[in-house]
Amino acid sequence: MQFLAAYIMKGRLQAMTVAATLALLSLLFPPASIVSSASVALVTLRRGASEGLYVLLCACIAAAVLSAVLGVGYQFALLYGAVLWTPVWLISIVLRVGRNLAVAIEIAVILGVIAVLVFYGYQPQPAQVWSQALAVMIQPMLDATPAAPAEQIKQSAQVFAHFMTGAIAAGTVYGLLFGLFLARWWQALLYNPGGFRAEFLALRGHKQLGLASLAVLAAAGLASGAVAEVCWNVVVVVFVLYTFIGTAVLHASFAVAKSARFMVPLLYITLLLIPHVMVVIALCGLLDTWLDLRNKISNQTTV
Image (cartoon, rainbow, N blue to C red):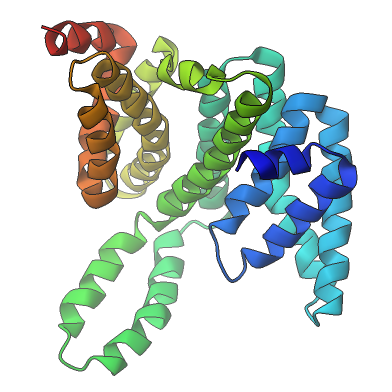
């Protein structure tokens, strides 16, 4: 990874080539989009907004040319590049100027919330749209496995359709932030060893946003109908923020324990194998806003 980061920083052509190539590769292998967006973010973090924008625009053109050579419509490549790189470029500017990772994450999440609200304003009945899309997606699976409980699967899809807007927005924000984190880690590897680790472990949310999150959660639980649905979708996006903060809290707490070399890897293995634990981690991230859980847990784990 350090080799790739060093290659990107050699010049505009190298950064543009990596970003464009991996963007097209991500159409077949989606995780490649994280590395692609990290390429633009790294240039922006290190060399500034104008240089990052130059690489972004040139990478869009390069992706369009490559897609035309491969027989794919260049219009799609241009749009895909703009959608993939513009948000991470903007968040990278925020991080470069403010030098506060928590603020950059919060702004990314707020953009996701705005996207949810705009979509609900544009499409008053998004659940019906997602329900039809999910029905088309699961039908081949049901045809291939006649023994599958078709009615139960369809009912689950209909329930999930009410949260699909928030889920897609949250997934997009996760991808955006993973690209930003990778770029920040690359930057630390090349110019400030250990810097990203310290920055990540110091993550803490702001109380104002914490209170707003609690208010939306309360509204989601107390309201009904369309209002409740919108609030729950917003909660899904806000969940992203507190999963990162909660992970940082637990990592920082376990890192000072006597068994740190076992507990820290176990934390991330648990996240991968048991996704439901993310709810507990998000709760830790939210409570840390007021309770400073790092010090409390650290004091217990070091005893």
